[in-house]
Image 1: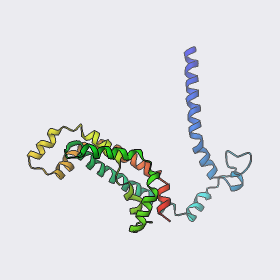
Image 2: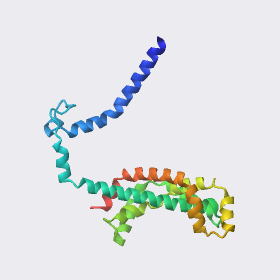
Image 3: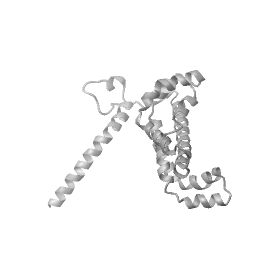
Length: 215
């Protein structure tokens, strides 16, 4: 009996927590179907008296919603793919190549992760204004084409790829580009896919920078 009561109480708590998390979305849907008078009424109504399905049609007539959606898809997808590619390049260089200043340069890249993006808003805006990229896709995409976190993530992953694979390919006459494209990239796809998802979500939610460089 005690076990049953304990199980019921656990499920009740889980259901209550789930309702608290879902409620804002239910309210969003419900309020979108209300009239203006119902929406601002006090006390607030939870359910519209008569669902106003025409609200959605009115919004789509006033605002080019699907164009905005397409812009978001283009920008977020482009940045995600660019970040995955540049991070794989940087990760491969820092993981499998030796050159003077390698550790110092990698630490510098890691240091860039300590600075918030807000710090670069004004310098980036003035730079893009001078080169004439304001209010273009390039202004939305290029400032985010390289990620210090992405380079770090791919570098850590590529370090686990056996160096013997790369050395054997080099002995067979493969160039660095071929080694990168046919060995490193295929083996790094799990990490690259993770980076693409993280970057896509972050850029999809990015509002401040697009608001600054577009009109």
